[in-house]
Image (cartoon, rainbow, N blue to C red; front, top):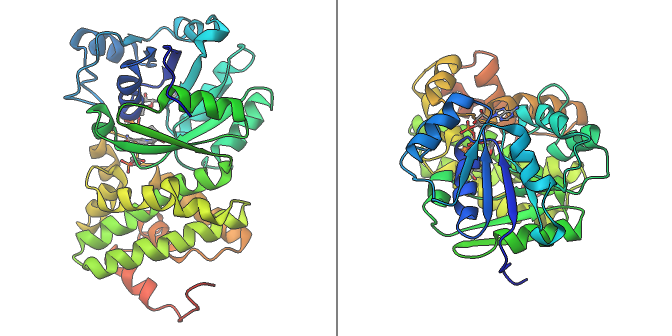
Amino acid sequence: MLEQKNPTKITVLGAGAWGTAVAIALAARHDVLLWGRNAAQMAETEAARENVHYLPGHPLPASLRVSADFEAALAHVTEADAHDAPLLILACPVAGLRPLLGQLKGRNIPNAVWLCKGFEAGTGLLPHQVAAEVLGNDVPVAALSGPSFAQEVARALPCALSVASASDALRERVVAAAHGNNMRVYSCDDMVGVEVGGAVKNVMAIATGASDGLGLGLNARAALITRGLAEITRLGVHLGAAAPTFMGLTGMGDLILTCTGDLSRNRRVGLALAQGKQLDTIVAELGHVAEGVPCAKSVRELARRLGVDMPITEAVAAVLFDGVPATEMAQRLLARDPRDELA
Ligand SMILES: NC(=O)c1ccc[n+]([C@@H]2O[C@H](COP(=O)([O-])OP(=O)(O)OC[C@H]3O[C@@H](n4cnc5c(N)ncnc54)[C@H](O)[C@@H]3O)[C@@H](O)[C@H]2O)c1
Ligand SMILES: O=P(O)(O)OC[C@H](O)CO
């Protein structure tokens, strides 16, 4: 796939750390508009030409437009010509996906490409299942995922992502627009696999952060990552994913990054749990979404309902929601009966 030479019209809905970083990266070659729902924050971002709240220290390129005007943001892609190959990117957390899609329903959008990672709280649905409920099946949709810290993407450091969609045309459009410079974009049609990998790695990052914070060592970290991957794969395959997807960027790749990189908000939740901090305090101090927290609850419920064995998720959820001290997490995992590694 060749990199697209013509600029495309792109609207990014959601001006948190990741939406801002993706908008900065794509604005190097495309006509990009970044929309945020908080008018005061967007005015501050425009004045400083920097998202001082969510992504400080990363100046916006001159060509990147920012706005809190939802209609203008939508018109940027809905009124574009076909040769503009417009793309609508949704950069909100999973909790915001259904409301945001609701605002887009019936608005003649060309497509919807989300960046969020998780299962919807309450329903236990993956993002593509939420989109099907809200938009039906007429709008082509995709998930763009993979190992990618916003701060590094905003600095144009190298990264590799994967776009998953049932639509060949949309996969090609995303790759044509986003692949290039220091970003490689692969593609696949395993939406379930890509979304399960992106969601559950955040739970594993909380586990690994807690283990590291408690000083349990590098052996324990490697064990958690490896058995975490087994657990993610077990759930994903049960939900219909292809097992090899979990060996790729959105599986093992993102798992390694998030479990080991201190830029991870989810890993930082685990480190703070190890210090004995309360979850409310941790979340308030973070100032960003940590998707692994709601995801641990959703995945625990889903796994129990489906009869899928997910001991690390169980241990993380027990610490987050049942008042079990982080110090007990390892004991609970170690006390389990031995099992066949590949079962
Ligand atoms: N930050 C990263 O490095 C990174 C990388 C890859 C993927 N992601 C994923 O992207 C998603 C967003 O993460 P983030 O880092 O931008 O979070 P963040 O906490 O930095 O910002 C969240 C943003 O979403 C906005 N938002 C929330 N609900 C919304 C709604 N209903 N409509 C519109 N906007 C809404 C908030 O106002 C805020 O601007 C998460 O699912 C995260 O897992 C993040
Ligand atoms: O900071 P985290 O833990 O939300 O992780 C960010 C990205 O998902 C890493 O790929």
